[in-house]
Length: 136
Image 1 (cartoon, helix red, strand yellow):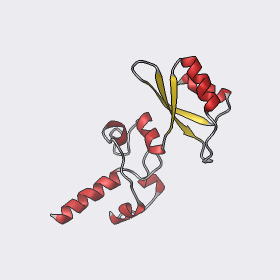
Image 2 (cartoon, one colour):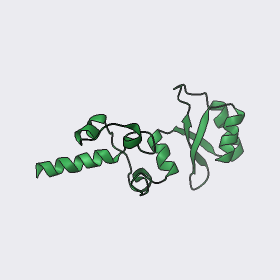
Image 3 (spheres, rainbow, N blue to C red):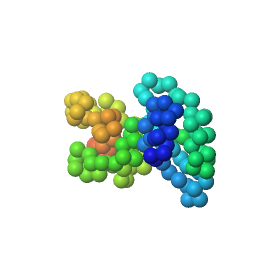
Image 4 (tube, rainbow, N blue to C red):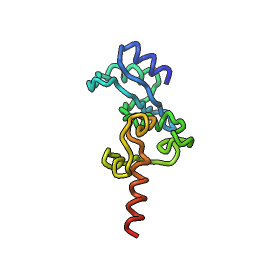
């Protein structure tokens, strides 16, 4: 991870290396990264080629979303428990402002946003639970 970060600086890439996974035989490396907010994808061919030569492995680059970044980094949520996405949630569901408003809550970024800066995933599960109770 340190080497990938150093090479990104060397190539003047605006990449944040979030996580690195080696496959068991160390012949392939998956590099999870986050790019700048300007939505332009940098040319990573020379960077990947140089990193592959140093690590003697095939390099696969995967861009991450803010939710995936929170999953990799982990941490505690506002409830005091480990982040759901880091410990048990395999794939977060899509959360909308309507779901939050349906629960009678007011939208406020500090109160309704999770560690990733997006709406908290738990609003989706609380909504599902409420709908099941209404049907019974």
